[in-house]
Length: 314
Image (tube, rainbow, N blue to C red; front, side, top):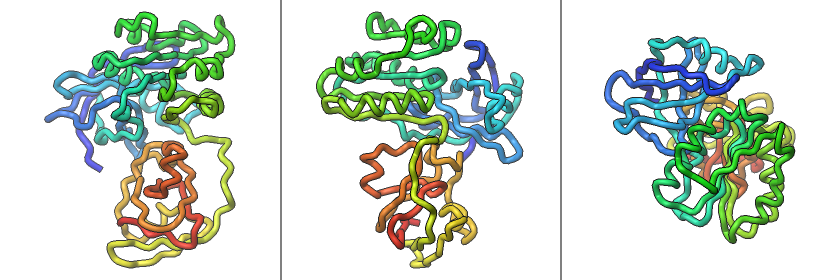
């Protein structure tokens, strides 16, 4: 995975627990900057974390990510908030598994807390296109609405709705879905309970698709017990056994095969590999049910096989 030397040029507190970080590339410009994209931030000692890009400069030499301070997290949040202006680090090239699709039916954006980052970038693009859309920004309280000012600066008028739980109560996703135009799509990102509520309400959509991004592995996914299976490498014909107590990624790495690695939780898509044959036991958090049903690709860090063998395009 290509990385770019960069330095932190600004650090701004947006709410009690969310800060914005602006990184500047040292030479050249960043590539792949588009709504929904995320980057790998290399924080030293093997610690790599993924953050969605919510803004970038016109010359693509600077980009912004926002990070929620979580002391009970996996270390990335603490390391990010310990960075000081001028600190240098490596940033991995942008990847995008949450991009706006080409068609432009009515679009509803639903952002929860820090999940506003990719949706703010989407809203900015949709405004530029003159698209028909609405955005709902759900937060605990007004002081936790880290991106309220940024949304207001887009001139959205009646398209933008801020929902504060402490004042407005529980958000009614069912009513929202029922009020959507025919064949409208939903793009949503936020905490797991909110995503689950959106997906449940979405069962009653009148056409359209729900596109979502998770920031943490789903905790309510029912998976079958691990079983041993085989993986065949298409380029060489080599066949390896994947035992119950090892991931497919571990086996591929042990056999000397090069696979990009990021979160190792099925959330970033770094380890996505094309599947040529076999049925996948999908356990990732980024592919939609429709994408999973194709069996065309898989996240080898968490997903396994339902069939006795998978053939991978490696």
